[in-house]
Picture 1 (cartoon, rainbow, N blue to C red):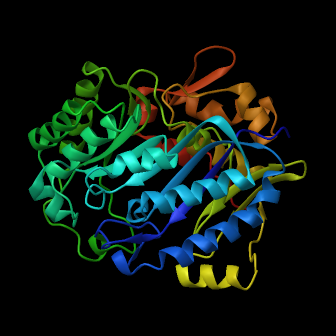
Picture 2 (picture 1 turned 180 degrees about the vertical axis):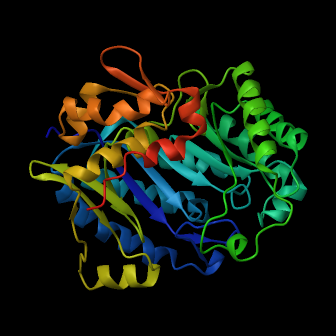
Picture 3 (picture 1 turned 45 degrees about the vertical axis):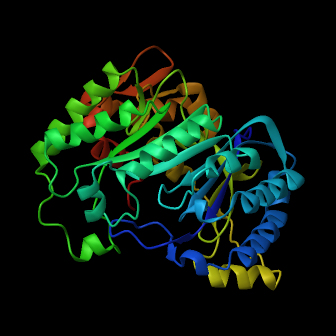
Length: 384
């Protein structure tokens, strides 16, 4: 199989405090995080990742967390310099860093831009101070407004604001007011998604009692999509809206079954080789991760993705895209045959969940987007 585009994900795992809805690999540490030790481990990790790139060009880099903005611009610059010393990074590479408005000091966006970050993803989640308090966030509405303004002043032509809906105590009007407040900030990209209660979170153990009913959640979604469209945002993925053709290239690579290297505690990677498609993961605990690298251990198992799993994994991602995918891309990314795709899509097509726009492009219908989880699950491998 021909290798697809290649990205790099780097995980920075610490937060000031753990949010009650968060199921990511994040750990409370704040100012006590062993940042230099972790950065040294990341560089050793990148040394081990470099042979996996095999000279391929890195098209995008994503610094996720946790809260990467707990690390100073100087520390991020050192990390990105280490990336460029070890990999062939495209001249126009998109380099995204997640930032929490509560940990970005005044003027810091300028420092991160100078460090080599080209795109910020600002984790607002809400601009309503009552909702922020219920979500356990450490920032305020004013912090979000300030950071968005500073990002634009720092020269970030592309930045994202994360916003949740379906929050405790939130009705349709409150959700739309929140969305309008973000739209007024004119970010080039908005990630707008519903709060979900995930296992192993505080909200799962103690669910909020005032979450919106399902009908209210659907009303919020429908009205929000209309509001975003009227404001000039194009929905290109289930929860991603972009202006002026500024989608997140890194996430698009995920959704189109591209390859990505992994560095950092708990980071996941995917590689396409002449022998097949493989997934791997780094140790999730930051201390164990650092200790393993300090002992010069890789400890990574490359797990092959069986042919019968590739169809589901591809659909799990590509069907999130409003415009769907080309048949030729499915064949090149999965190594499966076009006839296998057509056969697999037939039941969903007959149910009105997907449609073939032409002889070569499949996309989910409005009904398919509404029942996306069911649509994706229909491609699960049959148990034997």
